[in-house]
Image 1: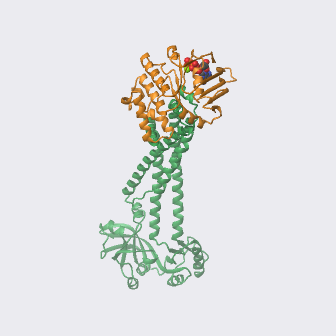
Image 2: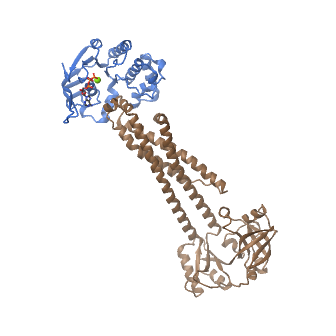
Image 3: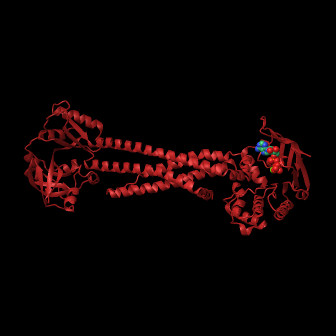
Length: 220
Length: 392
Ligand SMILES: Nc1ncnc2c1ncn2[C@@H]1O[C@H](COP(=O)(O)OP(=O)(O)OP(=O)(O)O)[C@@H](O)[C@H]1O
Ligand SMILES: [Mg+2]
């Protein structure tokens, strides 16, 4: 599903601020797998996730997503791939502050052109699945961190993308909420979605099928 | 849905959006009011000209012509010219009336039966000056409606007597008719400048003034032929008949009206264009507002892109917002402008005229402005790099 070969990412290449964030990385994640990426701060985990998530492109090397060479896609096609194949769950939740929980959950479907009725139905079901039906009309600022992250998971659920990329989803949550989020990621994985989890937490990483350790931009 | 979201986003910028909206409204307001004045002015002039008879022309001594006296023979001769339907002697004399002991300036016209056709005189009460009055050198007169209502408070005042000051003496005339005055508006507007009109038999006017000749001869031209060529042909022929070179001129109301309208519409257009500049200025305001809004929402744009929004989606979102903002502004401006126009018309007791064309035009123009000035901020938003946008 995700196939990366000899991939290198250099920020601001050919300047004195040049940073090699990923150095000749090769990696494969199979469909239905739950992979955890662990490594020290600054080791290049987020950079890797951005590339896997088609938000950024590599400097060198190859990345195939479901057999398509992502670096060859136009920006419109990349948006489409993001919308249909990938859902992000960020440490900072990344909900839109002016939209209610339900509207946030609906958003990916709007860009896919799903009719309003169906959108609302999907949003409702997803919020129910994360246990937030009662909070559907609340703004993110009216929700706790754990609840916001659950809304983000509901958004991923509604988008129904096969790949979930989670960048330290529990990083700013207490252990109880964090545990809840981890449980939800596992249940998403059990439903057949591929999950790539970036984490500092060794305990959380050990619950994954596989740990990918990264240090200074290299896989070890 | 998209529209609804755009509205919501506009509401988010509360004060900023409101100010931008005001800017657009003021610009559109200026355009609407200025063109409203133009439309009303043109209307007034047109109806004033229609009163004079659209197919009429006036032969009179030119400024350089000196003393050329026009006679009965000339009237007959002129009426036989090609393109001329009728001719009527016309005498004019500034005068003063005394009606119910109130004196006011007026303008006395010596006419005959043909005044109905030639200068489009129309009786609303009583009758016009007829052949009988002309033959009898009768002391009868027709006054115009405005005059009647202003001095008597009602228009039907036939049978009343009126005293006219002509050649230094007062003469008493019987009012036999009240003529419809198409210039009501103009006369109202310029009251004091434009005197009231009184029509009397031209023979009576001759008796009083002691002149046998006429000042002017009014012509009724064949329908539809009142164009520039005919006027210049006639001028030549008329001068030939009187064996002068250019002692006589012909004023054609049609072409005069055209000229006046041209001037008026040029002035209106120029003023509207100047007002249009304010629309451009408000367009720039819209751009500023949108740029600020893009800056504020960078992170939001990043989030949207990360969940599948295409550049195009982001672009439309912002474009729709700026067009909606200007559209709302221009609707406000149009509403205010129309109100002011209507109020102005009522205040000056003119028929209410609304400059529909400019309203539509300024609406389209400002919306286009919103789109045009919205494009740059929208593109800027659309082109944001999602990772950088998310980092903010
Ligand atoms: N836009 C950028 N421009 C230049 N350098 C960057 C940029 N983004 C990241 N880097 C650098 O690349 C390296 C890897 O960064 P990255 O964000 O991938 O680390 P990380 O493993 O996610 O760290 P953390 O655990 O703290 O989130 C770091 O040295 C960072 O300074
Ligand atoms: Mg990181």
